[in-house]
Length: 310
Image (cartoon, rainbow, N blue to C red; front, side, top):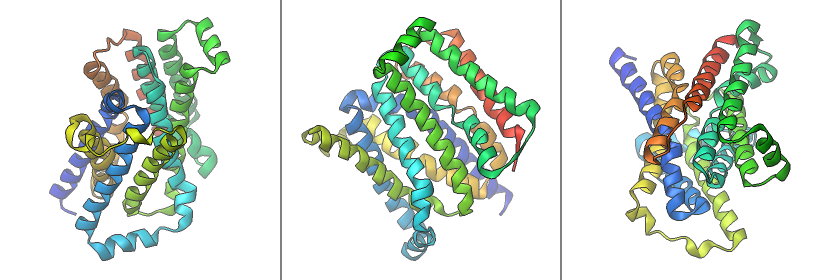
C-alpha cells in the first residue's frame, strides 16, 4: 500500500479516537433526553442498520456476505458475546450514574480496559512479561481508580456503598464489568485472526440494541419508543453515526491499512479526551486529582502494552 493510503488510514484511526472520546459525554446527553434504555436501543440498533448499509454498499453484496459466512458461529458465542456485554454494561453504568462525580468515576472505570487487555493476555496466551513494567502497570491502574473513587467519597462512604449494593455500587460494578468484557473481547478475537470481522459489527450492534429493547419489554415501557427522535435529536443522530458506527469503521481501516502502532498508542489517550469532553459538555468541574487518575490510567496502559510479549 502506498504511503499516502497508509497515512489516510492512520488519520481515520485518529478520527476514531476522537469520536470515541466523545462517546460518554454525548451518550449521557442522549440518556438525559430519552432515558438510558431507550437511548441505548436507539443508538445500537440503528447504528447497526446504518453500519449494515455502509458495508453492503462499500463491499458489495457478494463480498459482504462472504465475510459474514467466513466467521464461524463460535466467533459470536466466544467473542461477539463479550462485545455485546460491554455495550450493555457500559450503558447501564452510565444510566445509573447520577452525580457529577459518579459520571467521572464511571468514565474512568470504563477505561480500565487498556491495562486489563494485557493483564488477561498473559493467562489466555501464556505471554511473556517484563515484570519491571507489568506489575507497576497494575499498581498504577489500581492507584488511579482508588484516587478517583476517593474524590467523590470518603473511605467510610465507599464501604457503605459496597455494603448497600445501591445504584452507586451498581454503576461502578457495571463500568468495571464493561471494561472486563472489552478486554476479553480484544484478546479472544485474536484467536480468529480475521481481518474482515468488521462484517459482524452490524449484527452485534443490532443484537446489543435488541437487548435493551428486551429490557424495555420486561419493564413494560415500550410505549415510550418512537421513530421521531431519529430525525429531531442532533445528539442521538451523532451518537448513532459517530462513536458507534463510523468509529468502528475508521478503526477497522486504521488496523488493516494504517500505522497500527501509532494509532494503538494514541488510543490510550482516550480517557484524557473523554474526561475533558464530559467536563465541557456537561459543565462539570473536574477536580485536579481526577486528572491525576487519568494520567495514572494512561501510564498504566502504556506500560502494560510495553510489558507483554506475544
